[in-house]
Length: 420
Image 1 (cartoon, rainbow, N blue to C red):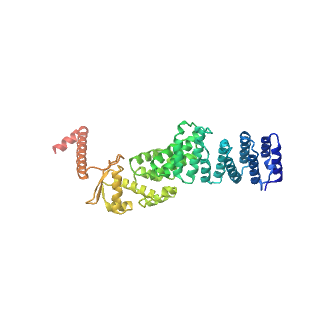
Image 2 (cartoon, helix red, strand yellow):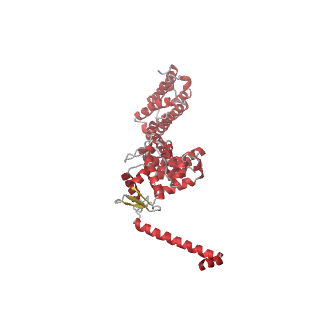
Image 3 (cartoon, rainbow, N blue to C red):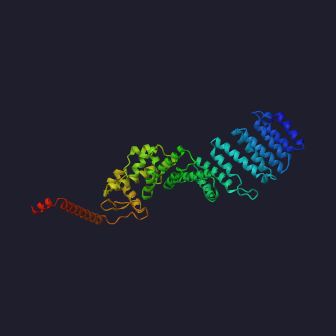
């Protein structure tokens, strides 16, 4: 119920020669005229009286600006949401003035969004900000102002893991960010883009984005290390192959990586060493839910990444290996091991060929180019013969060089041996 003091003040305001000043005076003294129990009803009564008084657009704008400022200064999140929601409906319901109060409506929605964010109701905050008119012919909005709103919407949707809608606002930002010179806003844009790439399982691109952000002086040292940690996680989860190897190399050579928990996995992957289940399980504990999601073939993103890495590691150890033996090494059955190998060869991520008759995989002994179809190696039997010939030739040349060296250093010994 509205307090008697406020009711009396509102009645007096209507009779004043300068109603705007009277309403602003009420707002200034609202904590004296109202009580904590009735503050919501009292504030509602103020804007209801304001619209009923029909004071004109200019006066209404001025009083509403003070009203929104007072509402925010009360520092009560629930009050902002409750009263602000009612005022939004009142403005929208005022057909004669709603299009003239767009700036006030925008300020009010931003205040309400801040309250929702403080209450960790990020979806409500995003929806509130999305209602702000940014392309209206009655209201000119700069690219910077648009970017500020879109970044807030984007980040709120990312907080609830709704990457589909978040990406919509990321695409809007791409059209204006080249005109923005605000470093902090640019950083939020890059970080949001990296998080979307991560959520969409574009791990290689996300790793590169996170790594770039980790060098930014605009964020604290612990945040830079956290971002570097995210870069390592994404690189490890990326499909095995030459592109991932290059990213792993850059992260491995970053001196800061050695102090992170993920360094052990990073080192083994960079050096193409086989990963043990215990190491993988320990690494999995630090991943986000979407990074442990199940893929279309029934395995997790991490499990698939580890299998492909261990297959690449096996190609460094063996010239050839049977389907079943490889499956045992990878923790798969023979047919699944063959299928995984075939896909990596076909996609240019592994050099080799498959003999399906003898059920043997022949590894190329080098790196594939990463281009689709480039992983198919030439016939292995012929290649192995040429490798044997090359090794024999190299051995003969080494023996010849050794003999020449001995001839130069110990001519009498060589002469005696030859004569013998």
